[in-house]
Length: 319
Ligand code: XMP
Image 1 (spheres, protein in one colour):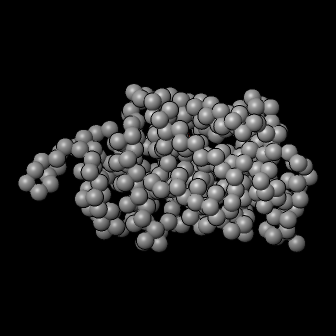
Image 2 (cartoon, helix red, strand yellow):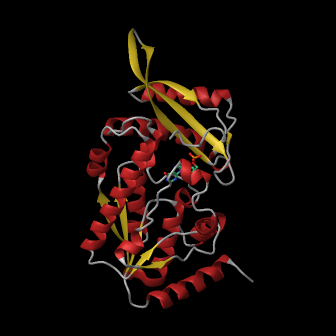
Image 3 (cartoon, helix red, strand yellow):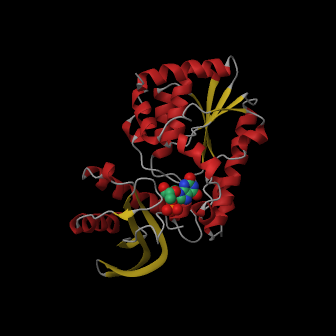
């Protein structure tokens, strides 16, 4: 019978057979797919695997630390953590256009990844967490409507440029199977059950120019919102939930004074594949509680809205 335990054994043997005594590099992002691929490959070949975590400074609060804690400290995986946030913020300065943000981040990501791979003396193989749906999509629907609307970046183009062969142990799996495999491998639920997160990160949740201060403000609001969602037991019922920091200042009152700070939008949707989505119907009392906490605890935000747009005609992200 096909079980995940069998798959794990077979995949481990296949990785060993493919890689031999070669060296493998894997880009780690904190997402489910690259995390499971890294854990599986590490189980197969140990220190022949080195993971590179290009930290663009645009992750959620605490997530960079979690990647390091889980992979380096718990799994003992060789992990290069490159804090490249200075480079990313410098390049993003003054850029408002969403596609320009994506291109800038995608290009820098590849540059920094290559630098780190070079410092390691290169490798024979590049590991990727490609799933079955990605394989299908790349042969049948490349350039489909959503690809035209938003150029979703991953590390496309890297293997050819770096002349490495690909190791893609998840090519036959669907997302729910990858999650199951991750649990089987002992990855924590916070990683395995994680909502999808875009490669360009918080940059596309800040319409208009992005800077460190805005990212810090957004991270705080987003952490409060996600903590409340988890505490209410709603995380797994939602496809994606996040805060977008709006490029709008609004007037408020705080004590005796007038405030003039940013507005933000809470977003939460249900979906099965991200192609269509419905707004999540929170109780109003949940929303007002979260709004109260954000305005009281996050300096820089004095107004909270809830985005009730479905997809289509909206998109899940704001950019
Ligand atoms: P939209 O906003 O188009 O998003 O409804 C659909 C799904 O794709 C994710 N998304 C991205 N993922 N790079 C990514 O890796 C991107 O540039 C990007 N843009 C959107 C989005 O989070 C949602 O899951």
